[in-house]
Length: 279
Image (cartoon, rainbow, N blue to C red; front, top):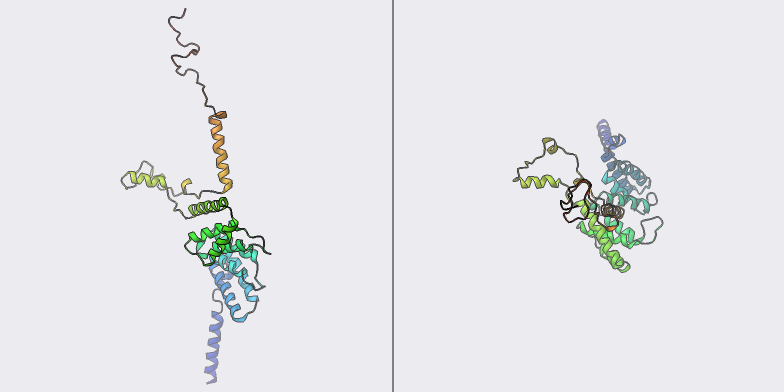
């Protein structure tokens, strides 16, 4: 009887040990998804034991996965560093990872709302700094465009609109529009689509098979840089091209040697036929 009890206890003990962190081996070998699960295990252990070392371990594993660009790990780090516990609390780090999610257009994480909140309250830095209502309003617009709008958004919007001038509000809207356009519009080969439509939708055109099979991204498929710096450079290039074509705003009136002359022109090129009545 004792032997059966010992056997049952040993089996339960082995099963418990095997299920504590089943993904630990894969995590040590560098599997990002497994590293996220191990980090989540430590977060759950902190909830059970309130031992701060669990949060430190969680941050370590999430960081390993975040270095591999794992979106779930980045999200977990943003939330973890925003917690009040001294083992992990770091406002600047939390802001950094929310901003990383924004750069990756991970709108489902509500990263734009978090950035809006941090800019509006000045908690984007450690220690807290001066609120930036322009950026707060900009991120609020992006969050609203995602179709997920927490109730606090209206409060931050009212604060921002009281602080911003009409021109700043318009600028924020323009920037938000450009971001949405650049990141959410589908990318496709416009010329191929138009050629296929013009040929009755059968996709036959004058391009060679090599062109049709070319899967390399074209210029039209690349995201357009609409930053202020890029727009200013484009405007400068356009002005420079216009200056080269029409220097000082005046059209060139020169003619290449041998070109046909106006019949009423006072001058003729050397060797050209002269007037028969000339003496």
